[in-house]
Picture 1 (cartoon, rainbow over the protein chains, first blue to last red):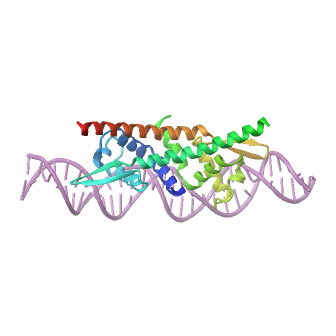
Picture 2: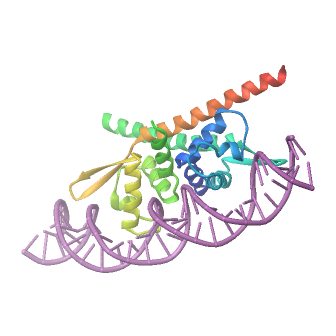
Picture 3: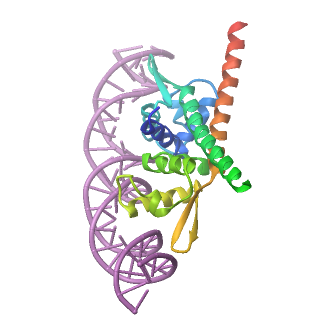
Length: 105
Length: 105
DNA sequence: AAAATATGCAACCATATGGTTGCGAATTTC
DNA sequence: GAAATTCGCAACCATATGGTTGCATATTTT
């Protein structure tokens, strides 16, 4: 994944409302737009815009089902985010190791 | 960590310039403000504001050293971000398992 | 067919964000 | 002590963002 794509992913997760949505989707059953928009303290249309942000960042996918639209979490996005952080941590560890060896010399 | 803190962490990582800074810090040696601000396509003061965002999200710490200020990555922040995503993935997996069992019945 | 439900579209608004420039101050270096 | 380096502060600007309201549309349900 490109730097820009990773940044967009983290940006999408970097909002309390969107983060709660993602948490709900990972927790429970499949939700439609209306259900996912409840109890967030904002209007349905406000929530809809946040969901669109998640769609654009590929954190979530939409599946129209008759009158309603199901929202599905894309676990691959989460995996990519976690992998990116892990790679940063690996480089950091490597650097610490090199520094330690230098000190011991 | 609170939801808000996690959101702030991801928000801090959710920008190309800041993400590149974090990558530089995990990669190489310790950098001062000026060095970290180079080759980003923006001014020193522009970069300084982005660094402040990283400080506020506790991704990075500042250590004044005479005339210059060293910027240090806080690996704990990365770990917390990774842990949060991992917990989401765990819940997701658990849900998939439950669904699978239901289908097999 | 009428009513209820779930959603979409668009305009609008206040504030946050990412960036700039100009200038001053502290610390090294020569 | 003068010059160069590194940084801080503040004002300013354009655009993005997070939210609202009003209204239209498609699908179920009764």
